[in-house]
Length: 226
Image (cartoon, rainbow, N blue to C red; front, top):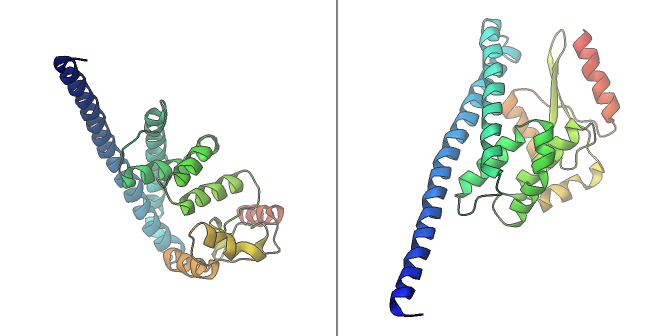
């Protein structure tokens, strides 16, 4: 290879690298907007839910319903975008925040997308692109939606009765080993998580390790029929 050919080859490699860098930068910007939309609407939703269910502010019920519809709309739009981004595989060279955004959109997506992308999130955790705690959260969410016990204790169900709103931890497989499993994926001890959940929701979660999936679903049905 003569000097001119070598120079053309170097310039081509530089152009390819620059194009990839620009593409990653644009994807990062897009995912930053998606993260802001996902978190912004959920912060409003959490505040309204607490005001209505815990503080009894019934004047905000219409706002809560409207915001709930907005959550579903944003989740659908975000999931469509992530599908498009992942169509040709996971993009390389993105920021840590961007990879976390890909995870959170999938975590908030429908069950078919969660099942489809769960192996990808596991690979991303293996590659250090997301945390194993984030993979564990998605793993639990899929288990709950499939009416199976969760593994890491990250999921709960909330339903209202005539006089109160109740928050139950979804059944957990082999609960005696729970904290060991949580430690393996970088999650805080379960007791600390329950305390944190109480602070965030304003509702003290109920956890009975003897309750089965069938029993939790029966409690939920009873609450719905009250």
